[in-house]
Length: 372
Image 1: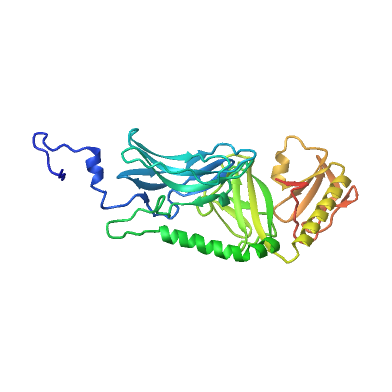
Image 2: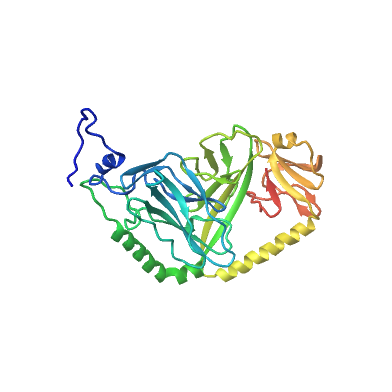
């Protein structure tokens, strides 16, 4: 049967269906994800068992999908013993007359991703990503997510009538090259690289946009930084920028006493990983001994304004209260310690046999010092 279109209707003799309109594009553009921007419909780790699909456009069997805001999807809880692999799919449901982005759960005990459903005139799925769900995990990390948008065997990028790109072989080549490289260096990497996870917390006030990092070991040129507000991870370059000393929020904090958590991932190369591990264990032991000597005392560092705003001041807490000129006043609860004023970096007072000041730039351990 010969079909054609489109022409003006005269007396209702030229009526066209959604399929007629959609078929106009069959030979013009391919199925997949529109490649601009590069993050279109990208699956990203969020928090817990939740992942985020970024904004973007997709095209599937002559039907379009526009995700105009980050979409949160929650995976089922991990099996306590068995691993599985889930998929995030873009799905066309012809009978249901809809396009959607959904989680396609894998089978526990299998490392294979679930098979895509592809029925002409029915359900048709494209895979945006695979997610490895390890036994007992409570949080999905970015390392567990395999981006499949570029793989034309399961998804691919939308191309036009002239510019047809089959990225299947390219995708496989990238994977093969990475596997070959990693096999050649994995033993060395495993034995010589240590990842150090550093943390700091800043209690922000309404209107704050400049958040101090407060991690002297942070190297902005080499280290990875993550920023969380109320437990939600922000997107670098969109929600914030940073330098060696501050995180600059795109939008000001709106509520007083909002916790802003800074995480820095720092890699250290060494040929003596075991020695460093032993040193860290010894350091933890020394920190524990220090805590014992403090007799349950807690140390907190905060601004004068934050200290003044406290409705109650804990008598078992030593407060380091600093002004904008580098001066510290120390209090035990609401009682000022004698000789308690000093410049940052100078030993100042002895509490239970412990010097409360330090020389140089102070570095605080989250083990016993909470910073506000």
